[in-house]
Amino acid sequence: MTGTEWKAYVLKKFKRTDKDTELYQATTDTIADMRLQFDSEDYKEEAYVAGIAALGDYKFALPSDFGNIIGAITVIDTASNQDYDTLVKVSKEEYDERTPDRLLTSGQNYGVPTYYCIYGKEVFIGPVPDKTTYRFQMNYTTEAFTEVSASTTSVPFSDRYRNILRCGVLAELHDGLENFEESQYWRAMYTSGLSKIKQNDDDNIADDNNVAYNGI
Image (cartoon, rainbow, N blue to C red; front, side):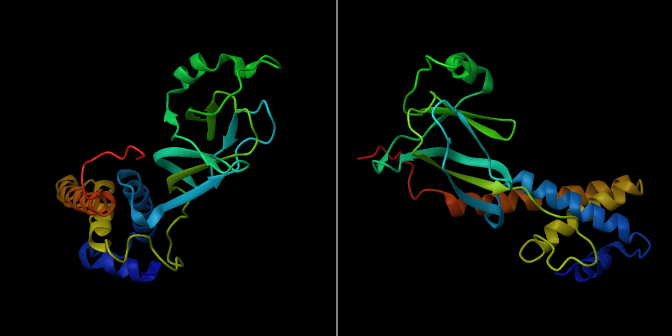
């Protein structure tokens, strides 16, 4: 739906025509919430990052539209065409404890990366890579989006999930008007709808069985 079509759809339930600004603001906020609540197929990306530029480097920037990482990061050596195990995600505190030598100007413990953490919109890898030819692959949800307005050409989630999105918007609108009972009703409808979407997405990405892949 366009922004104008979306407003007309919401007004079928809201019935007030003097709250356009609040309606679009509530739509933007609800879309942001939906994207945080579940890893929608609509906003999944696959990125390949070249990694470090020079020996001694130990971190690289996340994609500009990065939202949340999905699964693990895998690494290959483009020079030898060799792939390695996926990197283990650790906390920044554990990373600091395991890789204190990264801050040294010499005597660093170079090696094949085996773990990482995300901090300050960057990926810290350890140990400090012994090559500049490593390439990293990650799956993630995107985060970049714009404010919804009357001129929006395509309102996110207004194709398959328009009713659920409308429930969230109505909950926000009635909350702003202090119609708390009405807001609670639409909030419950919205939460129930999100659960259904998440279940659908889980079914889409689930394995056919629960046997873990062991590389053999």
